[in-house]
Image (cartoon, rainbow, N blue to C red):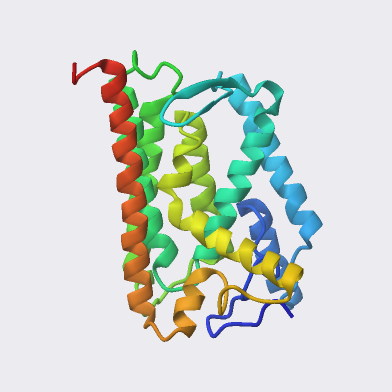
Length: 274
């Protein structure tokens, strides 16, 4: 076996965990588990079909409202993806959703880090709304800022009861929604590649699982005691609250660096230091 159940009730590594889904399919997954009184839920094929459907609808809607199809960091890089934009949408939505889902393994970890990331997109979208001539490619940044602020407040409110020891739990529906919302904000603000740094914690969690699975299947050895990586430190003897707070700090560093690069790009474009 590549993975073993942890004391948190989650699988030790991806893709063994049935977490690769999207809020609608994850809701159906949870519903199937509840109504049929079994833990299998939906199959991987059904979940992937749901991902394709959501990504396709988002890409269609993005095309209808004129979302830029250029790949961007703090702004478009001049690389127009054209019809391949739908692949970027699929990659970002599923990647961010599952990264957040994998991070949701300890009380407060996904919610606390997610709040930091949503706060960053409040700043980014509001800045774009205040400087429309500098960011003509941004799609409805004022509305994006409002929704990001709502998500920021919602995750903080959830965190109040999810902080260790948790009294309520997020589940796959919530964690996938957090990642999906972050990806949609990146797509609408044209900060696709910046999301990799801004949501660096989620990227690291997903990479730890990918590396663990690849190492085991290729060489028969595990890199970490358990994946995602927060379980590695749990088995190393770190208290859960220590892991959560330190991972919040790491998430905050990624957010701060992303905001710094975003503002540095603004300064360079506006020539404020000349």
